[in-house]
Amino acid sequence: MLSFRSFVSAFVLTTSKAMEAALASLKWIYDEAVVVYYSLNLLYVAICMIAANGIFELWLDIRTRNRLLKGMRNGVPAYLKGMITEETFQRSNRYNLEVTSFGMLKSIFSLAIEIAMLYFGFINWSWSFATNLLEHTPVPVHHITVSILVIVIMSELTSITTMPFSVYSTFVIEARWNFNNTTWATFILDEAKSRIVGYALLCPLMAGALAIVSALPNNFWLPLWLVLCVIAVAIQFLVVPVFIPIFNKLSPLPEDREELQEKLDGIAESVGMKLKKIMVIDGSRRSTKGNAMLAGMFGPKRVIIYDTMLAEMDDDTIAAVIGHELGHHVHNHIPKMLVGGMIKALLMLYVANRCYLSARLYNDFGFDTRPPLIGFFVFFQLIDPINMAVDIFDNALSRHYEYQADRFTVKLGLTGLGAGLVLLSKQNLSDCDPDPLGDFVHSSHPSLAARLRELAKAGVDPALFNPGDEKKER
Image 1: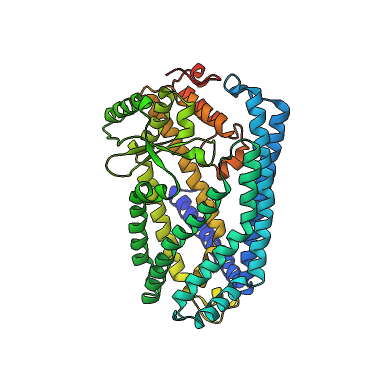
Image 2: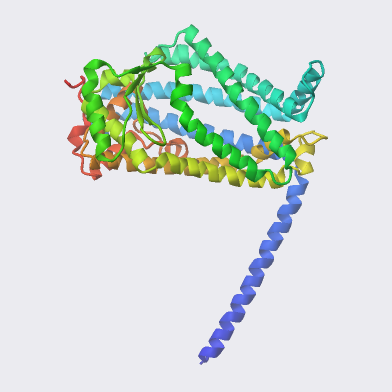
């Protein structure tokens, strides 16, 4: 029989040998990975990653189509009966089936274009074209000016290739399902405004970022990150007073709904929050779909309601929907997600700073020089799987926040949220019973069925989830 000391000695010896063997195995794996890494062309690695991601997304779309077809055969699920009629459920399935099928066609086309652009060196051609073009203008040929022009060229090419899909989606699919109110004049004006605003923001920001990289090639990550943080916070203040009015008209709440303002003021005051006047956004100018939001990270908050939602819901239901938005602010969801995004940006910039000067990033993509824009372009192509994993985590966190805001509404004593969610689902023909895997990967909000189940667990009577076929009397 072994003594305790002998047992301990034998255990330590065995454990040490096991750890040595494990470390030796890890070193072998690392050495082999290094050999494989240097034997691969990064261009083909990027193409394989893009193709794999595209195939995975198409597989998720196929699962979604199968789920919708199954719903069309089986009818309303048991947990949605009494809230969604068979007619509405089937109409939602047919609409989402058409949208998903068209999205698959668009995804296949976009995937083919993206792979072709990489394989045939479109980024190289864009760089040469931009350089030659600037040589015939008074603008100095510098990697920053060339980079900005390359971004414009690639953005415009992307817009040109996707424009037919946008037109068909808006004027055929959405019109077929009585959603579209967008005129050709509005569509063209929106496209023009998007480009003007986008380039007005992007070009100086990109120029500043590249200037920081040029000045601090080995340590740009921290100062660039600080600048991006300031910009991210500034945008939060500019969304309502600057950006929304460029595309939409904001109007005061109609006089016949002043009681709604008083009701929401009372709810906000009960949680120590101050609201500005409710504003109504002209969402009906483009679509019959509805939504609502609560804007303002600091100071007084502003409620913005789509006119389409205002026309379909009574005051109690709208109050519950806005109560949900108040929950996001009480729990600081927006600042938390903003800080989370800043942390991710910091990590990405740090890793990019350590990798972007690698000659392989440029040589494998056909570049003899090392313009920073190209280094970043290649770097973010190669870390696409990591971005996808981060997006899945972000969506899971967002769904958690949605449940938390729903429970906050219940704590306020507002029982109309379930009816509001059902009405919005009917109004927007949302997928009431999505594929679980696709929902897990892509959805930032829980499905209607999942949210109603959680509301019931929080103590809301499921009988209150049925809003009826007509709007309630105010």
